[in-house]
Length: 153
Image 1: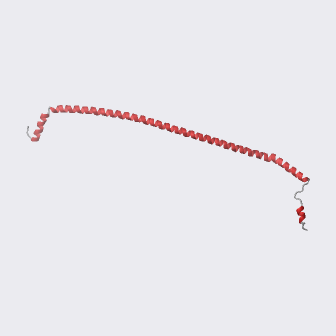
Image 2: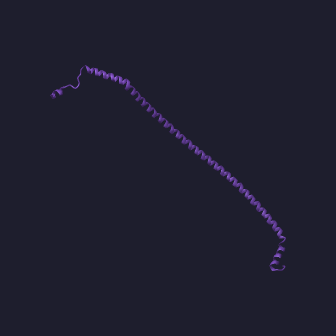
Image 3: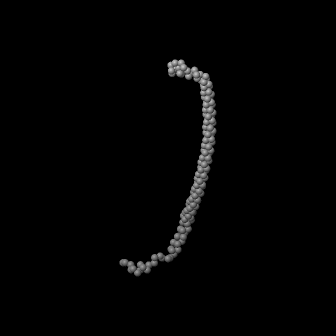
């Protein structure tokens, strides 16, 4: 036979008797055992992991900052080395240009001296040739006239 509806509504959901306290004690004992054996080690590992991750992040930031500092220092050293090399190169170029100018100047002066010497020698040879020909001008003129006219002048 079906149960009357008013009895179902009136039935208590939880019976509070002596077993309630036994179940509560078992629950508290289980919480204590789980806290000691499960939750405490798990929380410890989680905290340790957090500390390690935070430490690793801090170390990575420090290493990154050091790497950036070393990169900047390397760039500055490279820039100064390039500037020094350019200065040395410019100095060497100036020295080479001076040496070139000195060599060219010496060559020009030697060439000018040789030219003057050759001109002097040519003027002396021309003077000697004029002197030797001046005495023979009359005889050469007579020979030329004779050849042109075909008779003696």
